Image (cartoon, rainbow, N blue to C red; front, side, top):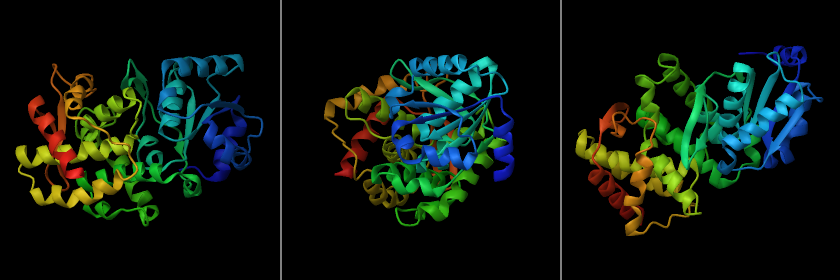
Length: 334
């Protein structure tokens, strides 16, 4: 990990520094970040906030901006924001001139414990999550909890969902995370993810366990965005974990007590979410599953649990069981 002095020296020696951020973060923190990094002359690239900007069109705008300002392979890009910014910034930096150096400065809880760690970068395409992307690590990930002071409550809950996920797949103590104590678990969450990534950077094996709750979670996220009532990533994962636990009880012998104990947590994580599913909406999720990146030979692969802390990946789950899990979990939410 770089010291502050090493980081400032690196940026001072770069041919050019670029900062990618969104309008929300820029309004609160951009001048302070530039002073702290010692790069007042950095080129600012400010986009509108939201998942809707994580596209190839935005990537092209960034590449044009880099080119217009003479970015070469000695340039450094600082991605300052939430998961959209770190995903998008990592992708554009790793592609430009076959890769320039980049640094992540996450400003949301979700980005601090998940999106900024692990070297996955990408954009959404054709209505589906993260369909185009790269594996490339940032030079550094700079975590500063001060940025969480301006985070809306709903975004805090979104990040908590990913922290709870680490409890299910790796460290049961993380299941104690809540809205009052999460800062004391920040480093532990990041270490869990990094340890898993270090064993399997390109997700050929054990890294797949990080997708617990995400198979159906991404479907919820894509479906809700198409209905113009978007769920956050964390809210979608919270629902996806509920469904994965329900299926785990039936397929992997998971104790039903685990699912029952999760229900109050799931309700809290979704307490600010605009959930408006009709009976006919459940099957509408299936086309999103068909485009899941973990699919193989046309079959959706799930991460399930045999017990807390014991995930099992590459499970094939039939569509009728998936639909049943959604019905049952939505009933538990009521």
